[in-house]
Length: 264
Image 1 (tube, rainbow, N blue to C red):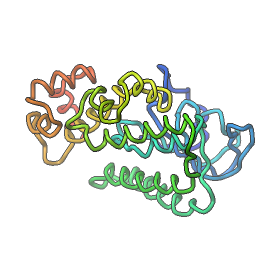
Image 2: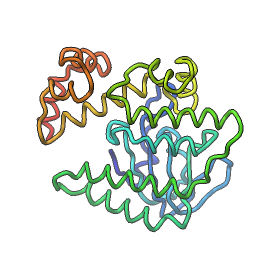
Image 3: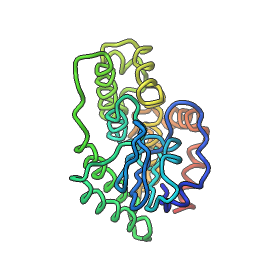
Image 4: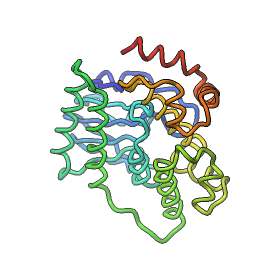
């Protein structure tokens, strides 16, 4: 996570992109200046949800003032509503403007997030994640309900069903074929649709969800052992989990857990 003033945010280099969607979302509270929307119109002060960090810089005027809140995938521990907002941006709009009716509540939540970020209180990151979830729900309320009846919406529906199923069943289901069977589509169609609408394949979503949960458990105050974490995530034994974590993240889990404890 990162909070920057708009001058710093505009001047920083664009993040490296490896193809597909960015691994970050941003919320920008603009108090002065303008934001260039996808239709070419300039919009004034307000709150903006940016689904792709790389598309965020460059859309704000030089006199822009305010703050930009950047959240990485690892930080938010896989909040499905993030992808919902990306889909409701429909047709790939990179920037969504929050309506006036919701701004009071969202500004208050942003202030709470900023206060927690600048503090050294226990559980501050957990509090920020909780505030962020509420804030995203507030933003979702001011977006138009999705239309129905044509192929693009069927794809969106499939993505929503997959994300919901993933959040409920990632401990039991770890293969794309498992999810495809439950959703009555082919694995190839599921991967292709997820890649098209969210920027990453179904298999990558599954990998990220498992790793996010593993990382959250690794930082838990109960100090769970690798065996306990492996059991919680549905692996047969800790060696199977250790191999999966190494292949999926490129890191040894034991060393990773030690690094986290040193940072705490």
